[in-house]
Image 1 (cartoon, one colour):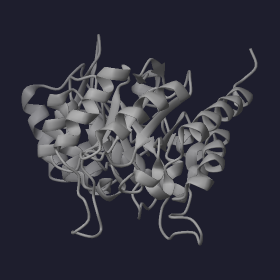
Image 2 (cartoon, helix red, strand yellow):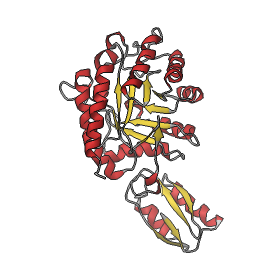
Image 3 (cartoon, helix red, strand yellow):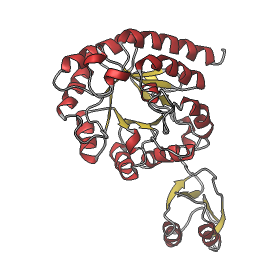
Length: 345
């Protein structure tokens, strides 16, 4: 944070400061107060040479460094009171449930419509449905644009807002044009900074919420939060962090379940945390236990794959989607755990 000796820098001084900061891969963001303007350094401000050059300017009083690598998502930032709401739920005040298909089958839309109604009756607030799917095998089903119409029709029929993953600029445009209120960034793109920037720019000025999955090979927690910072930096801070299991896989599970990082995230960021137990464990039988563990650790919600007839699903649904009956019971028990950890009034 750059604090000038005067109430604000002159245009010429701003230019000089900007040139120094940009030469180190950062940028300057003025924060205008009633009496004084200060200048935030957006980016990695830890370079000693950059700080020395700024402090050497005669019109700079001092540089206050924020040790966090992220400015907007930090728990001490001015956005700490920002609230994210979707599906009638304000994150942190009520448990958010997202549920639905891993992959929408465009040849059998009836399954998705039935599932949509079933997850609504089970108590879900947001309907998930994969329109486009990243696949390890290039010959596997990659999704279909037609599924976007099915997704939005299910939303109209149930009144539920929807969540779907986007992987490139074209899909991003199609989803926003269709009115998708929650965009999902999958594990394979969680470190695709170019895509994160595109999403951030596209949702700026909108009420769109972004659900950011944790990368399969994510390093530190700061790296995860910093990925969210890429999106929020364009002006829309409605980003939800979503642990979903990491590598290396734990024997018997699809990935290494990482719901235990929830309290660690909450020590560093105000951003809500919604855990995906389905991808963490990769098998329907283990999903309820993982979901309850996530809530016990402090998660603000769950993103669960569900299907009225998992054996007829495509993508991951046959192995990891729970039935509506199991979903209903899991939501009921998750709410009980949620109530137990809430402070007494």
